[in-house]
Amino acid sequence: MTDFRAAAQQACDEMRALFEETPLQRNDHLSLKYDADIWLKREDLSPVRSYKIRGAFNALRKARAAQPDQTTFVCASAGNHAQGMAYVCRHFDVRGVIFMPVTTPAQKIEKTRIFGGSNIEIVLKGDYFDDTLAEAQAYCTAKGAHFLSPFDDDDVIEGQASVAVEIARNMQVLPDMVVLPVGGGGLSAGIKSYFGGQGPELIFAEPAGGASLKAALRAGTQVTLQKVDNFVDGAAVARIGDRNFAVLQDVSADQVYPVDEDRLCTTMIEMLNIEGIVLEPAGALSIDVLADIADQIKGKTVVCVSSGGNFDFERLPEVKERAQRFLGLKKYFILRLPQRPGALKDFLGLLGPKDDIARFEYLKKSARNFGTVLIGIETDDPANFGNLDARITQAGFDLRDITKDAAIADFLI
Image (tube, rainbow, N blue to C red):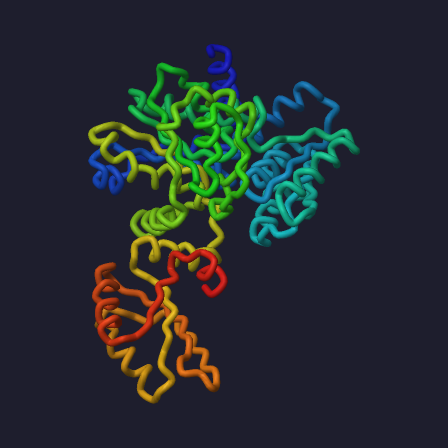
């Protein structure tokens, strides 16, 4: 433990040649909301807008020291690890080959290219990450290059632990609790290893659609999820890293909280509108989970690691949509509308003063007594939908709520 702490401190010191410490900021809004002393470790303000630069820096630094003749480094990533590695390759003036899925958004590809400049080559291979990873590893075997894992690597874990080093150095007294987002587990394993059993209580937040750590802890062994919801693309993994699980396996499953993806969207919108802080879904996990532990944190000092801010604003309409649905302020319905003059006018007359039609698609087929309408309604109070339902039922209209019917909603909406 002493050796790991010393190594993490050295890694942290070495990083100052590349970037300054990320801010540790008290957040008045969250502190008031939860009656606690809430601080944010702003990893979204690193040069690549995520903590991934830390692990990439430390792993590449140590690889160069161990293999001075190695000049080519490879990774597979569709996001933050790619950008961190690109930045570090330019810093050390080495060649980086970055494999990314063909489906990677152009914005992320361009940011990676900007960070790496002429030091990197971007290779687009595979529709899915597993295919991309296989291509990257095959390239390493064929070319004798060095593969830099995004999380399942001892040197990456050590580099991510520098977050804990900076927290400890910037607070006169250690916080009562540190809340961490979990994806592959590199950050969590690093911080847990650094603080050990004598440090703050650790709480872990992972996306409900990719809760691989909680599944593994419950099973008592590694688990590979059969299905993953990729909305929280920076943290949704099917299997936590083996090295990381070795560190985290004695964590209680009760310390790990799966976060509902739709509720997470409300936190992203809240932080953007109230605090002006842009967070990607994974970056908001530690803040969102405060709602689940509100009773535990009253009067305590809590640090939340906001792990990333690489948010593509083309996703904002989806985030807003999911947030409204979670809050009960927007719903989608299938309406069977009688094919008679005035039927639509009768239905519209049932809407309340705060009910706004956000979507309306009417399919009228000949020789049918009823037409089908897809209708989306927004309102300012969830109770309005109950009142609307009562009026519609009394009027004899057939209205089916499909908001939570994933199969139908995904196809139609």
